[in-house]
Image 1 (tube, rainbow, N blue to C red):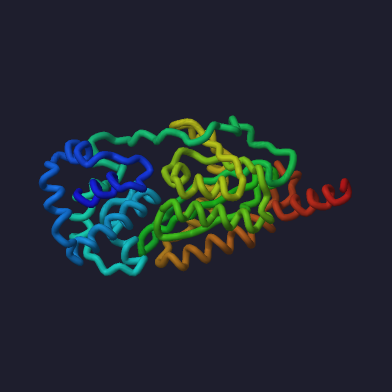
Image 2 (image 1 turned 90 degrees about the vertical axis):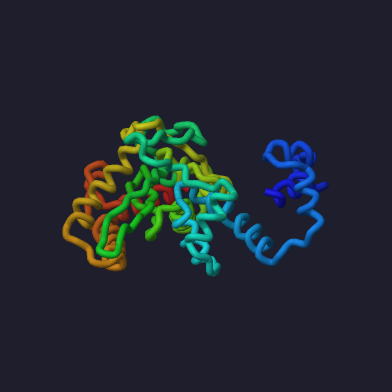
Amino acid sequence: MFPLVREMAATGARVRVPVAVACRVLGFSEQAYYQWLKRPVSAREAEEQHLIGVLRKLHIDDPEGGYRVLADDLHDLGYEVSERRVWCLCKVAGIQSVITKRKRRYRRAGAPVGDDLVQRDFTASGLNEKWLVDITEHWTGEGRLYMCAFKDVCSNRIVGYAIDTRMKASLAVRALQNAVMQRGYPQGVIVHSDRGSQFRSRKFQKALKRYKLKGSMGRVGACGDNAAMESFFSLLQKNVLDRRPWRTRQELRLAIVSWIEGKYHRKRRQRRLGKLTPVEFEAIMMDAVGLAA
């Protein structure tokens, strides 16, 4: 805690807190702090301070992850740290998952970070007016596989998606980046989601602002607020996920991509689109826009 006091009392701190106040709040004496300040910081202490800083950033990106998840994230970043040590550092820093022990069956959804701009109106007069986004998961012989997908309300086309072994904010951000690049960086698109922590995360909200998109969120426990996206995942479930057991994640990943790109986009005709496929419908829309111009 002593490094935290030093950081809070630093001259260049955004909100400077006097040493006496910080020590009183954290529950130790000023004398103990100044004694710590006089002695040199060991290499071990400096390393732990650095690791705690990294853990705090990882926790902000994925608040649902516990110490084991954070240990995996550190390993991915190149740090050789045991799960036991990560647990100790998290305990010292007060870092814990937002998912508490199961005292009750359901967990309350977090507060929305945007208004509901869709209001269950799943229609659009043109492409790139409204995008719906959600995340689904499925078991394989190697564990779960997660998919985040963005769907254009006008054409029902999946404009961007990402697949990973972890359901983190970075999964939603990668899917968003793919959608933006595939659609030629449109601005002002309404991006509608539920209140999942991945979509409420600081990383995802920053990405929306960076690409000049409008965030929208449904109500708590109202699955109908994103029904059009749920209908796509229902199709995916029937046509791919539940067709047979999947031994490996790679096997399921290839099956999902093949179905979306080969069948859903190019072969599956939809009544709402005048019995056209999403690709055919978008081609007609683009031709109409070109003639109007």
